[in-house]
Image 1 (spheres, helix red, strand yellow):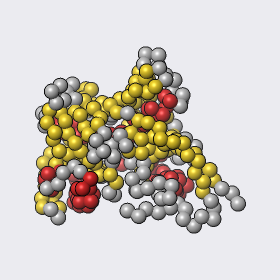
Image 2: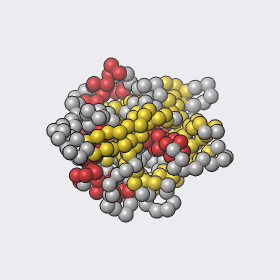
Image 3: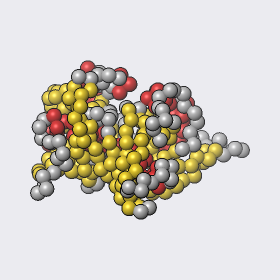
Length: 338
């Protein structure tokens, strides 16, 4: 009998798990974006994703990434982000976790200045994690996103709770932004079952339409998640405070404030004139984890006004794991009950 060993290093960022796998079978493709397309239909790669994500080794809200070569020598490495429904195009909490892991593991040497830049190629482009250190301790991580922008404003969506209006914006993936109050709900654990079901309705309404299309790369098309938000006013220091819960893929709940969701939120708020360049968005999640986000610069992409957001968070290692796959285990790769 041959038992396969799979070793992982696990982190969390803002409460959202991230399982890092470095020993990955070769994935065909010249770029990380191409490797993602390959992985989606490669039984060996997708099977590994399912094994580490599904129960009994994972759970319905598990998240992780396969470390792969970057697009060129300008990146320290690339990553294929995954969850229970497949492979995503971007992941901010994963980027924050990877920045911390790269420095703590010695994969990227610590810069004596106290800020080490970790360059990561992801399916939606090249991102940077600026890792702040105090001696050997990682203090925080700045996630510098790809250009983010509003695709559509004031889009009407018909749901079982009536018609609501949402903003659709891109922050590495495409999100629909809806105030929770539009459904008579709030950002709370008690509202989660209704918000999860409503996210499926919103996506089902929008995904067959042109509102879900990415203007440059069809591989990035599709409403990846719904950001439910509520305003919490302005702090004495001038920062804008909002609380959100992001429901992505098929009903997965982000415990963190959501990286690309936060970036798309920054784009939406800046476009609406509610977040000025240099002003901080204090973005809290359903677990009360708070990340700080701001506009680093403004630019254009696909003929649209865009911003380059920077999101500051923290990540902590939760464990190292040696999983096994027994060839006689009839529950491989596993199951998901939700």
